[in-house]
Length: 185
Picture 1 (tube, one colour):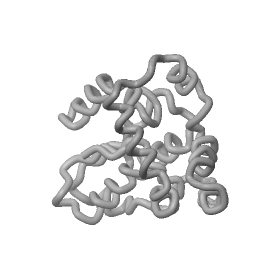
Picture 2: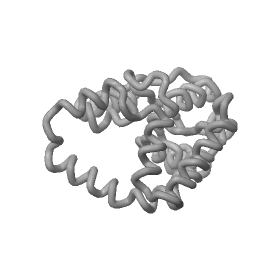
Picture 3: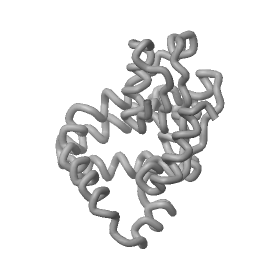
Picture 4: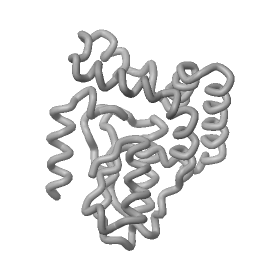
């Protein structure tokens, strides 16, 4: 199973609660920021994002989230902005994501950000958990959180091409690396 970002948090919960349903979990950059030394600051930041959503809407809240998490304005975004438009299938996916943004801000951002993985259960369980990090996302909030999770699990993080959204920016290379990890290589 692959879960990225909030999907990785959901995968961690699934693996801890229903280990017979998951053989291997690749948790790519789970934003388990409550594992970081500055967890209180991150909790306040998430509350601020939510309050921005309530007062100004989903778009401004998402921009605040991206800025605070280090996801906008970096070299990857500048490079992406100078490239040609994404293919139609990616545009369709982005359209669906944006269509769900209001729901995510209203009901997902806080539970996902505040979720603390059950590290003890994951360590003792049968699920093979691999924590993925982007090769170019060093310093970003989810990257730091993923490294903290891998450390608590007693495993080394697995590097994937690209950044937090590497599967979208470099789908072939990301898919090849995912195949290697799932195959046990």
